[in-house]
Each structure stands twice: as C-alpha cells, then as structure tokens.
Image 1 (tube, helix red, strand yellow):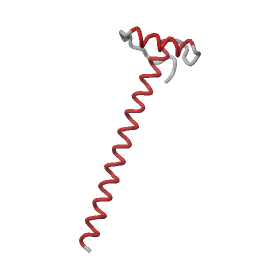
Image 2: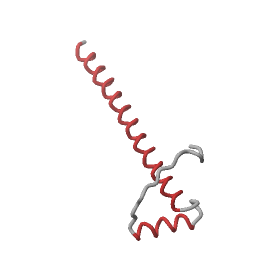
Image 3: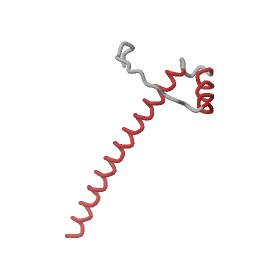
Image 4: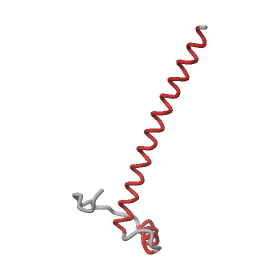
Length: 76
C-alpha cells in the first residue's frame, strides 16, 4: 500500500493497560508510533483471518476428495 493511499479517520478508545503495552512496543523501537502499531495489528489480524479461510477451504476440498475416494472404494 502506498504512502499516498486515501486515509479514513477512525476513533478508537483503548484501555489504559493496553495503551501501556502499545507504548512499550513503540518505545522498544518496533514501531514508528501508536498509529503504526494499530495499523500493523489490524493488517496482521486481517491477514490471519484470510489465512484461516484459505486453510478451511483446503480442508473442505481434502475432505470431499477423501469422501469420494472412500465411496469409490466401497463400490468395488
């Protein structure tokens, strides 16, 4: 995603304990600022959701193939 991509303001209320953890990550040098941390966290979460969906699709395809093979073996 380019730096010039459109941005939408988003208000977020974060519990103080979680904010302290975010600040620790930012101050450790892992992130440029709080916004960078939040954006990366959201992107990572969305990527993981997509990964889980892909794995589920593969699992369904595997199960379908296995069931078809079992049925063809039962017929013989």
